[in-house]
Image (cartoon, rainbow, N blue to C red; front, side, top):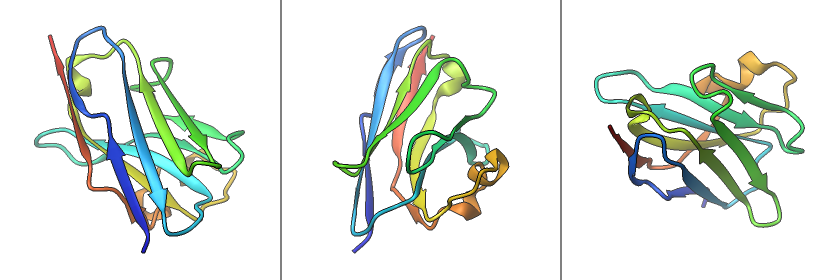
Length: 126
């Protein structure tokens, strides 16, 4: 059974740091990504990483503040978030799929991922 389980959500003060984790099981995934959905907004792309880790993409809104990484031996993917802002408040979703593209646009599309976690809430207080 394919499963993605996020952990690490919580309440963080603005300017602080936080790390999300996602544990994958059931199969090997070529690509991982993090998406988020703020209240009243559509889900949006945050970051993505290829199998090798050599291709990494970020949304402009988090570039320079977030770092995505993966540990293939442990089937884990992480999102390190720094300099958090209240507008980073959202439910964060881990996604995984078979994508092996060289296009950053491809990695930002929800349709590129066929497995999703249940989401974890991150709330940034001002």
